[in-house]
Amino acid sequence: MTTALSIRTASKGRSGRPRDHLTLGAGCVVALFVLLAVLGPLLAPHDPNAVDPLNVNAGPSAAHLLGTDDTGRDLLSRLIAGTRASLAAPAVVIAVSTTLGTLLAMTAAWFGGWTDRFVSGALDIVFGFPGLIMAVLVAAVFGAGLTAPIVALSIAYLPLITRVVRSAAIKERNLPYVSALQLLGAPAARVWLRHLLPNLLPLILVQATIGFGYALLDVAAISFLGLGSQPPDPEWGLMVSNGAPSILAGQPQQSLYAGMAILIVVVAFNLLGTGLSRRLLGENA
Image (cartoon, rainbow, N blue to C red; front, side, top):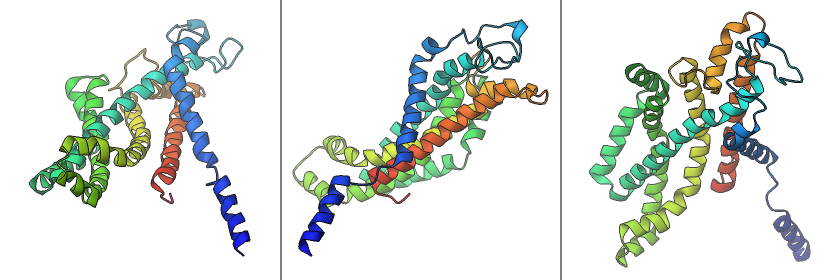
């Protein structure tokens, strides 16, 4: 019996957790789009803004593998070149909101009392305003472009990361090792950077990964409404908007391909975030 148990235990140890092929596939898709964002202008077969009036809404061909848009621009080149603009804005939103949200969460958890109540109350107020509506209002006031919506979305996303990290930070703050470090005279900054933050990083990474997909949808929606990226930028949300009039004419390729790119990236980030949650946090998601 002991030998059989040892064999099963050794076998389990060698095989480990079954490989999550879905998470691996999502990670590969995310890596591919990140690579396109970095190298997009070099990989595009044509100038993404070059207009060809003689090939308006042309179908796929040897010269244009995905066809052309309503002004004769190569769709494949615009999709590739637009990856950078489409991913950069939500990346900034998530980076800013995650950094500030983590700082607020750790501050509230560390000091507690009125500081925690103030932070929680302020977050409740911000949480009452939908992020997309806030971004649209800010863009309407300050003018079209991505700067104002990025700032608005960064603020709107603060409660999403702060609430989750704050709960984990409070639990971590009350562990015995933190009290021991304080008794030994360890500075608060050292405890934060060397102990609290590393223990919270897996949760922060998971929240940022999942939040990226939602931020991408919001940024694309703002561009679709004409308040974000402006022509001739090859941003995906703007491409969906520009191709909308051609859909009724039986030529949906511009909106279709850009919409598919948005869908693929959003699903990939959500699947990757779910897989990371299972592996890093041990959740049965």
